Length: 406
Ligand code: MG
Image 1: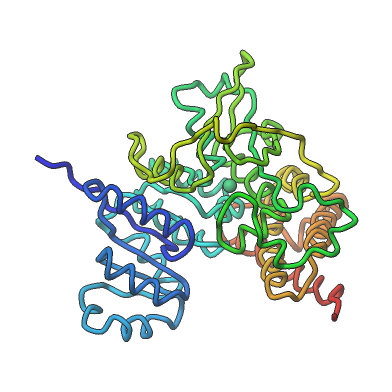
Image 2: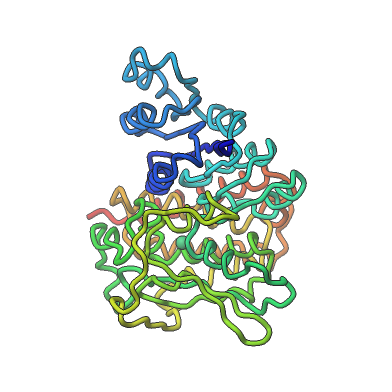
């Protein structure tokens, strides 16, 4: 008797991670069946995916469902079409799938991820923002529903693999590697001249725009430190960062006997995705196998916190706790959006994020807890959402103050 295929739902199927996930699924047609797909606005791509993978259900951004129906014509009768915030939640809850790949960008991912957890689906999490926003609450919910959260993010997936079969009490610290982005070798004095094109040109990874800018500012590593804290339930001090420009060693775990275990591979997201889809088994990913003779040299260096203060911000907001990480993340989302629209300079991202961290630090010092309790304590998802909103408004107001008209 053939094994029953595992049902998969992908939130954000037209993005970089979503497409890579479908590529891994295509290479393992006997193992998986696509139950649900979603996008925000890439309706044509979604229509092509519907034709190719015949999902039971799809969700689009608000007001986009009619466009999709029109594109699909008669085919539209064979798929349930949802839209908007509630649509994504319903998609995540939809029966028939055992695994939810959360690959949408930004804080909008949190509600559907929670919905997936509450319906008992294993979560393959690529949406790091949902953990940054409300990691403690998400993990608590996952525990309550006995749900596994598998990390898609290459660094966290490397840590996850390096933890196989080990006892947690033997873990000393983890080391997240970072390529260092396109400006690793630039001098700080040249940062004010950085253009959008230069920031979008990542040396190793081919990714979506938001995460590419986050890699250039190293905000991506900041978010990944916060993500690691919740995923592996460790102290912030147990999370180290190491620059590794070749992106071959994806991260490592060091144990109390001073052994360090790492996971290596080509910089291809299909490897961690295949790990999450196949877990606990190993399946074909389609990636090239690593040829270390060809790579030749692996190098490592300490991160430069002066050039990239975003790394330090992770430890600062984790120490403050509550909604501070959510506020930082919300603020960053606004700043990246404005940088992509060429409304602010690259260095303004650092300036405004630093000022946000200083502002929250000030509240702590003066114990101004009463009018913004969500920044200090996170009891419910609504606190995370309010902190995120506060961070967004902080960024918008700051942009108004510093905007330079060229
Ligand atoms: Mg990563």
